[in-house]
Amino acid sequence: MKNAGVRKTVPVASRTHGLSHADTVIVLAVAFGVLLMFLCMLRPAYQRKWRHDYILRCGTNLSDIGKAMTAYANDCDGALPVAGGPQTIWAAGLNDWPSASRDDAFGLDPNGAGGQATISASLYLLIRHGSLSPERFVCPKDKAAAAFRPAKYGITADRLRSVWDFGPDPARHCSYAYHLPYSEFKLTTSSEPGMAVAADRNPWIDGPRQKAADFALFKPDVATFKGTSEQACQGNTQTHRTRPYRHGGQNVLHLDGHVGFEKRAFCGFEDDNIYTTWDGSDRARGIPPVPYKSRPASDRDSLLVNDPPASR
Image (tube, rainbow, N blue to C red; front, side, top):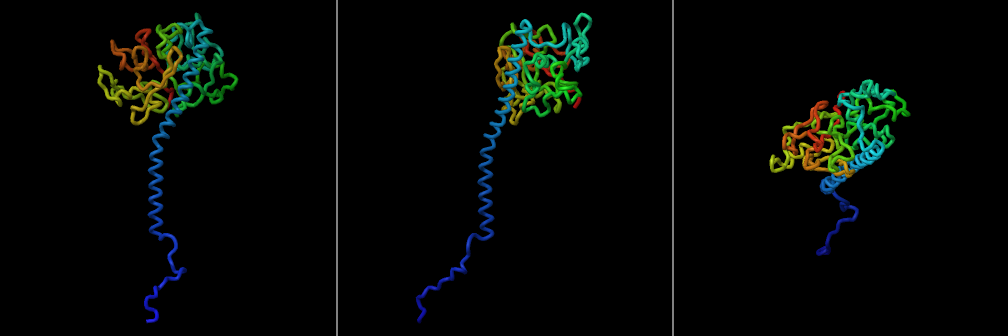
């Protein structure tokens, strides 16, 4: 036959170009899956960096607060900031926080004693002293707080250093706990250098957006209590709390000026819990504070507290 052995060819124009619709869907699905896996691999690293950045910026705030306290103490015979006068007590608010008169602001008696003050009013003295701006008192991780702005309360900006507190609800403008200054065991520059001075919010006191943590869940991972790592981290501040809880902790300013991110709350002098008072010989767990009532048990008992919110 004339055409025997001749191979029949398909015209070029009739060949199929590219992938079919089904093949295209498969290729895109595989590519998307690979991209998703890659992003999942990057996520932990990104979260660690994000968490580290917040911790670093918060630690810088506390470091600056420590430097301002040193400058304040140098001008006040070694005394750290204490609002009011002799026998002033911790209370829910000042008598008149915008007052031009110190006696009227704290409700002091004719001898300049007594009256009432918040914890934040003592820290606000660092602003009045001219050392710090309101931004330094807000942890960047604390979404419930914003820098104090006098104009929000109808007060001109030039009065920033003449008022006596972070507004009528200072918990919304101050993220940090401070060693209770209204007791016979307030700190001075001659106190034990390892004492904790300030840190992130106390977990056992209500915050602007969350209730106090459940103290029953807290069990230190030390021989006396035999708690797990997660149980031990239940005692950390809620500001930097993460899941799993073992990744949480708090920035702590010590009297010697150094700031460290501590993964356990029992990180004070002689392993004292910075957020509780002593319970006999128990320092690692202790007793949670009661606002306006609790006091340090001794001059070596750190008790870092903050004001509860005036309203939610």
